[in-house]
Image 1 (cartoon, one colour):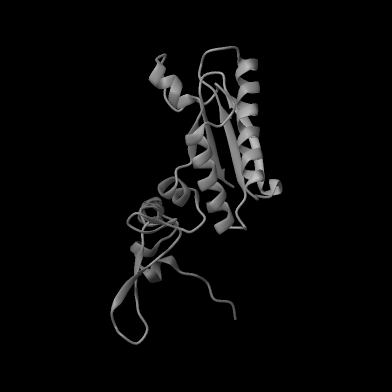
Image 2: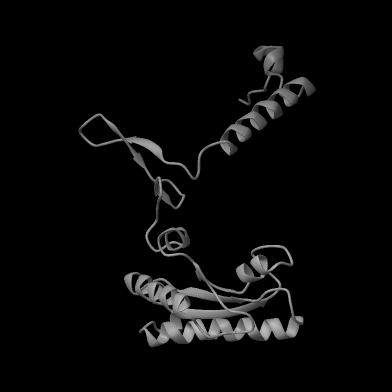
Length: 189
């Protein structure tokens, strides 16, 4: 025996064929999607600690583990604890004493996290041709890579790239802006 669906038996509120009911379902579903999108993804969520009945924060998907602390080996940790950039003099690619100190700190950090690989970015200020600045950025990145290699970091963990003047950190045509743009940046892969 075959049962037939009788929309009248459920009443007018359950008539899925009606245009009003379809609009209500779409509105309800949209509201649920909106609520789901507003959920936390970078924040910690409370969870019950086993046996105590108390709650403690647990990490979900973000890199932050607490105020001022980041996931070990992350770009955020590097930037917060050591700094992720060093600076060069005009038209130079050799590391000065401050640059060497920063590169030594990077080497120590990379030794601490042997499974981390990184990209060394070479940048230049806006003066000069595009080609000249790309070549200068490449020499800067290679200079940093060579220094890290001399500190015992395997070159297989390091990649270099030159952005020349294409990605300024600071916009402007002043000595202060140019000084911030003549840089090398260590980026965790």
